[in-house]
Length: 83
Image (spheres, rainbow, N blue to C red):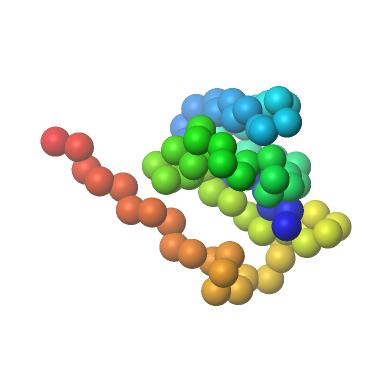
């Protein structure tokens, strides 16, 4: 299944995919559609997603946003306040 990666950070993010290609995303930018095999087992991708710095947006075969379903509309992780 394809999805887009959206940068929710306030800085440039560079994400290396499993194929060796890199995705450069400025604040608020979205990537071109990416296949899920490019991020399976990718520790950097999981770390950025768990911290809420990136968000995945499901897309259909033509790259258009997919309809929201319970599987692809999970709530964003909560951030903890640092003291």
